[in-house]
Length: 199
Image (cartoon, rainbow, N blue to C red; front, side, top):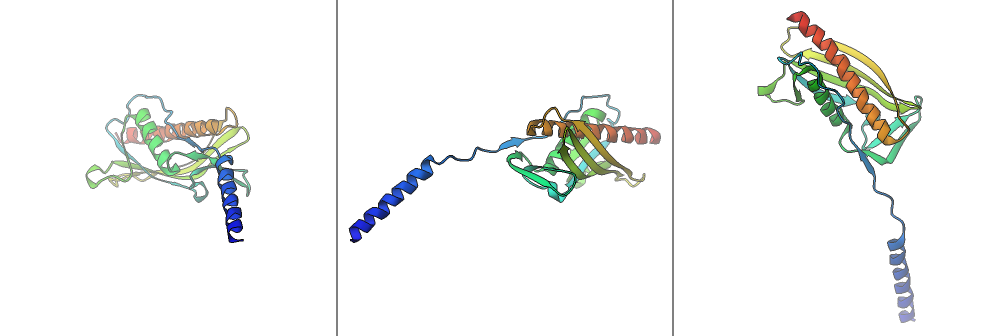
């Protein structure tokens, strides 16, 4: 009786192992990276050191997965499509690259050391980064501070939109990258006017 019970248990175990081997596994996730889009321009701020950061994103965006919402209360989190790096770090990296290309400024990432404190520092709060329908949207608050204390902070609020090529995650991320380029252009133009006014 015991032997028969053991055989039945062994057979069930074999079936379980075989089933787990042939069961379809979920596909691996896709990873996406924001990229700098700015084209190099005249080095109008070559004598200026500009720090970028910290960048803070709204809590609902602080996820590995790409997130979108319907403008009301609905939120979609897609586990198959993920950021290759934390979103705040990706935005900071791309803004450093964009602003360096647009202005020629000596850009550096936050945090910086005591021996490398920049003349000016850009902080960004991302209120929204989303794709709805046929467009992507970026809404931010930003401030550029004169760390020497000689000038009042330069502030801005931007709500930018960019058409989506299609509804794929890759198109969504490309549109986000272009929005960050637009943001960098707006900040660079404001900063250039202020610096030229001082000089």
